[in-house]
Amino acid sequence: MKLTVDILLAIVSVALIVVVLLQSGKSAGLSGVIGGGAEQLMGKAKARGIDGLLSKLTVVLAVLFMILTLLAGYFIK
Image (cartoon, rainbow, N blue to C red):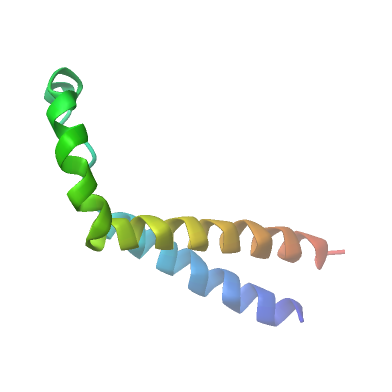
């Protein structure tokens, strides 16, 4: 059982890293803070596309990562 959890944890970890790196930046540094109002209006179109999918996938993978990490810690005993 521990080996299965460890393998799943490794796969989820790599997938989480890849998904986070594929996401586009949410702001353009300091200019994103100053001109952030326009991005709120245009941001809704981004949420429906690939960025929205990557965002949801990041949340799912992060939850799986936390659960598998807790299980891996439990099986150390």
